[in-house]
Length: 115
Length: 111
Image (cartoon, rainbow over the protein chains, first blue to last red):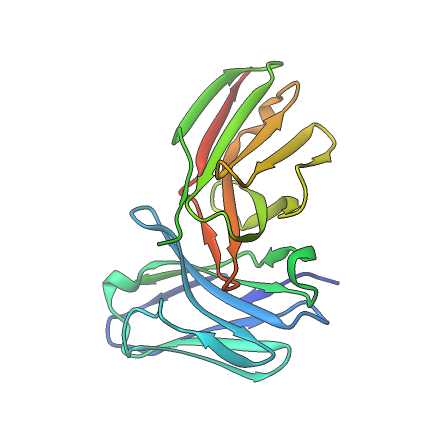
């Protein structure tokens, strides 16, 4: 398996534009996590899904952020409209069923710059 | 509130030395604990998963221990090498299945 795949790797956009980040889970995994990493705040959990259902979105900064899982292997994180303070590295991670026996695996991240 | 703390934030060690990285967490009701490595500008690489019922886990030169009662985990690196230089992150799966991260320890191995 190629691991968790994120696209794009880098995104530069102008303030006010819509941004969509994509994530492909590892085959067979059923939990999906979106994180944001900044120097100031470290890794913050934005939202996580289990079996395609959003379980906890309390980390989503505001209504400009939305996440979906249209199927069991794919997720999107959308920011509309984007703002400079959204600049960060966004990671997704997936986890197999099995509870405490399973590791979380991370993608390589999307570096977002909003100018 | 469930929190994960890593101290120190940065550590420099001469090559060849053994070293210990520390992680503490506030809630003993953990699912498991995972150690990651992150190289600059890169993603997170899983190093070790230690389950709540385990006391330690080993992989090569790495050994992770877990003491739930005291809310602590350590990552021991034997015979350090320059290639071990990276940021090491501790993350805890609490009962609500949220993976909560510490702020990391930036390790530099001096040749």
